[in-house]
Image 1 (tube, rainbow, N blue to C red):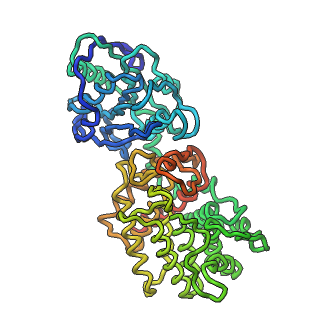
Image 2 (image 1 turned 180 degrees about the horizontal axis):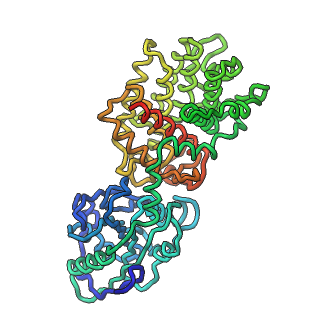
Amino acid sequence: MPSPEQDRTVGRKLCGILPAVAGALCLALPSLSSAEIFHTSIGVSAAGSPIRAGIGWNPADYATPTPRFLLVAGLDGSRESVDLAAALLRRSGDGPFALSIVLNASPDREPVERFPPDGPAYLGDAVEAQYLWRFIGMLAPDLVVDLRFDGRPSALADALQRGLSPADVGRVPATALRLAADGKTLDELRHEATEILASLAESRPPSGARRELQDRVSRSPVEVAGQLAPAYGHALDTATYIPALALIGRLRLGDIAGESPLADVERITRPFLEGKPSLGDRPSGSTISGHLVFADLYERTDNPAYLALARAAADLGFEPDGALKSSMPSHNEMSDSVFMGCAILARVGRLTGEKRYFDMALRHLRFMQDLDLRSDGLYRHSPLDQAAWGRGNGFPALGLALALSDWPKEHPGNAAALASYQAHMRAMARHQDLTGMWHQVVDRPESYREFTSTAMTGFALTRGLRRGWLDRAEFEPVADRAWKAVLARIKSDATLVDVCRSTGRQPSLRAYFAREAILGRDHRGGAMALLFSTERALWESER
């Protein structure tokens, strides 16, 4: 028998053509191993067409013993490979493997033959290859099979056979399954392809990528936080929220692990106590929320200088005569400001005992909801477009979870803020995908799975479970899936998978799709992962 990694040529002719592939996508049919098929999109083409797939195993479970195959159709540009892939998806069988299928990796263009793809994901003229490449890494099959009806080499199989690691998770074996049209019906061709796939399953070990992801998801929250902390939270050049939250994450890890970095964090923040401006001439939402680190340090040290810094940020919500402004400044009409305004106001309110800060937090929340809260319970990022950007929903989730942690129950705004938080968590839960992730655009599953929105929402859910704001039967499974999904996307060297780059207001849905997804170290992603992992550690210690 030829080597499983060699190209295979089987002389067959495709005489029957299926109706539209989309018809198959509407059917939840069993795979060749009689498992349930989950229908999804793995991305979009340059023209905006969804790249459809059927997943034949639980993509959040990397430990099952059955060999896992990913069949990729359409890279050769042929209609035949797409139709055969749909036929394989529609028909059940008894093969000794689980099968997932990308039904058409190139729905709108000529053959895709550049692997690994060039440029940042998910941008440029290689976008289909970028979606497929990272999808392969996070799915972690034991074998990728490029289904082809041409004689050209398989660039995908070649790249994987050379040991290149999609999504930086490890090696995935690959082969090209070549079929030639020469007299067989589609059903006969499907049967032949099934037999070949079954032969490839013999003694098939888990791929390196699958073993790597098994290791990742087996880590404890404290372990992964300990891997993140050396990479994030070691500078505060400006008092902005990204480095500030990373410093808070390190402090939280110290509280849990018993090795406090307080002295180091005080060293890093000392310039601001010695006169370095913390807000600047034109405070932004990022700098206002960055002052949360000073509030945390005040709680640990009782140093009034830290409280003065935190109060200065919160006081931007008031007129010189003490009257409440209509909103916190520098909101830019973006849903981000639910976090950037409400959290610091509520924290300073608790630290000072002054009710006016909670009054202002409620006013600001309502102001931002009037701007950005949609009728379905999700937030649009700004009035420029209705797109429910992932991090544009992560920010309200995180912001209200933090604010409610400080908001006294007796304050008249607490009930309204809590109800708003609960409604948002319920709306977000409806859009969590089968891997546990939320997407770059929450309600558009063809957009990429985005790291920070999942970490921020996961933190908010976990805080709500810890504080009793959420029903455990309803939300604990959602939080558990989010944690496992984030774990899979954190490497032991603190590199991350698919963090959306810094994003201001965008004018269209397509513009949100076209934001770079970072693979590597990222301070924003690291800060959010530290918050989530330490919150998860506290939750696991309490239940």
